[in-house]
Image (cartoon, rainbow, N blue to C red):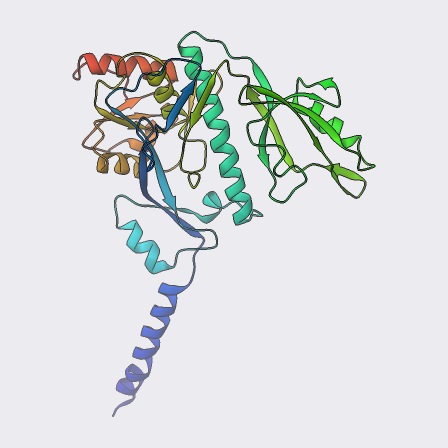
Length: 345
């Protein structure tokens, strides 16, 4: 056996081994895949309406308004070269920097908690914007955004509770709650007067004191004091802010007679602000793919995501939604004439 053949016999297996190792080594990338879509005008597994209204007439008509989701690779799951290549070859999937999906210095628990807070906030904003769309102004308020598991307020305060007073003083901004709790370094009870489901309650919480700093274990944020109750029965495993646009449209549809979609299936995405503006989101192409799979005929796109859909030719109509009001008008125009000119990217 000559030297060249001997070298080839030795090098060949080594190349295969090194190639296999290279394909398996984790890279700083994650992936987005199309996730399930949810018809917020539909019913849950208990046959209960996902949008429930108490104190105002509700109209449950035909049609579907679906919010879309993406499935991101899990916390700590960095793609190998082989996994990245297989996802890159799939037109419905995207490869993104790992830190974009899972920010540095965050934990899986923190990401889950943040997603829940964002979902809760998006629902409240959607309710307020939908009510403004029917001509009902909603005053702002200070609310419980989240309650820390096993914290002092667990079981006493609930997400969505509206703070009216703390220790007898009115609450007008989040700092009022923070400053009041800070005065209880001796561990004495903090007295909260709250509004929950239209009822005023008094709740007393004994804070934990750590390094002379009292805490009750809640996150405080801005919310709204609604004139009547609107509940969204959304899967608790779904988090984030990007369903706000579709929530607002579905709530508007439920509070007004007739079907906003004309009985058709529409989908979309977009975080919304208090004035109804639609903000960009991630994974737009994967959400469009999910909407196609669900049979949607029209998809609402945040204006800042228009560049992300260039070159796409999906089997549904893409409509730019700058505000919730613009999206509503576009749907009303489309239901009257499916061939009508609509805002486009």
